[in-house]
Structure formats: C-alpha cells, structure tokens
Image (cartoon, rainbow, N blue to C red; front, side, top):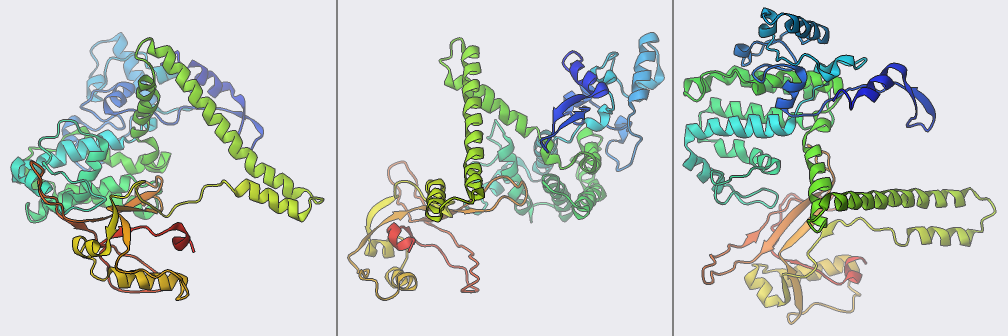
Length: 483
C-alpha cells in the first residue's frame, strides 16, 4: 500500500494542477480522507487487535458500556510501535491493543489521520453483524428456532414484502437484501412472542439501523440515532436476565457509538457503504467473466470493460450534445420561427416519456369474458364501472359502448412507479398491485389463493376516504387511455 499511495503522498505535500468542477485549473492537494473496508481490515489498517476498537482506546472488557474514551492518535501510535520495535516488552503496547505492524503505509501521508478516515460499514456491521448475527440469534434463543420460523411463515403477504415461506432456519446463504427484508417485519413478528423489554431492544437497534441508512441527516436525525442507542443500552440487561448473553463486550456493539461522529465528519454513512464496491465486483468481474468463453478470460474481460467504457463515454457525449444543439439554436437571432420549432420537434420526438405504470408484455389471460371477470375476480360491478370511466374520460358522445359480450386481456400484476426511496434515496420504487384469481389444485401443485390487494390512492381533484380493492387489471386501447 505504501508503494501504491506514494504518488498521493507527493501530490498531497506539493500539490498538483487539476481541472476542478468549475472548469478552471487549480493547484490541488489530494489527501486520504476515507478508507472503506470491513472491520477486520479496519483493525489491520489501525494496527490493533480485532478485539479492540480501531477508533478509540476502549478496553476489551468495556466495549459493552456506553462511555466515551480517548481517540487514537497517529503520533502516539507510531511512537509506541517504534518503541516496541526497539524493546519487545512495552506495557503501553498491550494496553492500547496494538499489533506488531511496525511500518504502516499511512505514516508518511500528509494531512491525514488514519483513525478518522475509517468509515462505518452498514452492510457488515449493521445488517449482517448487529441484526442477523446478534439480534436475530438473541430472539431465536428466547422463542426457539421453530417458533421463529412459524412467525416468519405467518406474516401477511404483501407485494413489496419478501415472504419467507419456509422460515429462515433453512437459509444457508444470506445477502444484504434478505437482511433488509427481515428488518422490515422483525418488530411486527416479535410482538406478543417476547417480553416487552426485549421488543424495546429490537426496536431501538432497528431504529438505529434505519437512521444510519439515511442519505441526508439533520441534527434531529442524529439526535434520534443517539437516543435509539441510549434506549438499547438502557434495556439490554433483560437479555442478561433471560440468560441470552453474559455481557455485551463486542466491538460491533461499541462501534455504534462512533456513527454520529463519523457522519458529522465525513457525511452520510450510505456514501461509504461496502455494498457499492461489492456490487462493482459483480459488474466488473463476474459479468465480465460471464461474457468470456471461460478460456483466457482475463484478456477478454479487459476488452469487454474497454467496450463498456467506450459506450459510456459516447452516451455521455450524446447527452451533452443534444441540449447544446438546442441552446446554440436558441441563441441565433436570425433563425426563422418555423425552423426553430421544427428543430425542437426533431430533438424531442424520440425522447422517452416517463411511464407512470408498467405491466407485463403479454397478458396473464387473453380474451376473458365479462362473465368470467365477474365470477373469477369477484368484480361484480365491472361493466357499470367501465361505463362510468369511459364517460368521465371521453364523454357520452363516445361511439363505442361496452356490452356484456365484450372480451378483455387481463393482467395479474400492475406496477406503479413512484419517487425515490425515503430511506435510501436510490432510484424509483415500483409499487406492485396484485389482482389474481384463485387457482385450484392440480396434480402435485397446491391450490393458490386469490390475491386482491387493497390500494390507498390520493386524488386531490376527487377526495375520498375509502380504500378500494383491486379486483381486476386490464388495458384499454392506447387511444382511450391517452385521450
């Protein structure tokens, strides 16, 4: 690492001329500000044992207490390592929990404090560590593994919730997505199964996990994080009383104290999540390998990555050229009006329209009669409701009126696109609405119950207080829908 970061050390001391975001050339002194690794590598970088904290000097038998300890110092750590190298018997070396890494790579980096560069790890510390490895195991030991599986299996089905039909004890390979799905229902399935104080412990830890994932923080959210951590430490003794734990002297429990400090110094912990580099491993390594013929794959993977970069650069260039062409044309005073509007039409003609809903390419059932819709989907008022919809959209002058002999293509699912997630802030969310009839048992296949979701819709023009149940999903012709 010292060889890799040698150019960074020289640039940090003397500076380098770089083009900044404002487009001008400035002399910049780049420094190491954040080091994104999981906990074992954090301890390796900080030159301390894995039973100790890489941020502060807390003793291994005090990790379970909510107390503040002195932060680690680069100067003191380097001095202790140097003395230990000269004299192998040094009490301070053992007191601070250091390891024999006498020549750390960060010793020559300018304007850098390696201990404040270490960032929280949401994936391994919170989702996998605090939640799955500790909280779930604590609650499972209280209510038994069989009972925990029964509670997961009994959770009400909902489109956006993962259904653990076989429980969780049979799952051998866990991912971050499955941990997040478990967190969404964990407090609900524990209600009534454990002591109220245990429920408070679970709720406080899950509140902390959800607050830590926010992309934007305020003093209110950071105070709520600290309050959730205090609530956990206030009620954690119930786990000792129930014989689940003897103590809480675990570095992962102690690391929660440093989240707020790290967020104030470096920004939201979501920006330093180890999920991103692991996803890059899939994009750049696994996908590239799958595109090769599995022989001499390294060269083929490198060529595939070059092609992907070329496509990305071309896409960015085209996206930059299109608005620039419009702006250039608008600035010309001698452009004729009809040419101007024709140019606008040419630029926007093939621009994709943001869809508000999505359905499958092919319907689940084709040419379904109204009688079958009313009986199979329990949509008794289908024909009157369709007539009211057509009148509201097209008026009574519409030449085609629905009759009882008409047939429709029916879909089992409808996806409605909403804004980005409040928690993660990533992308658009697709809300899934189900309207599928009951399917009788056939052979070894068990019976599938009907799924008719209740939808809460807010319409400012026509306010109403009831929540309709979606019985049937069908599509009219585009001319009717887009009229």
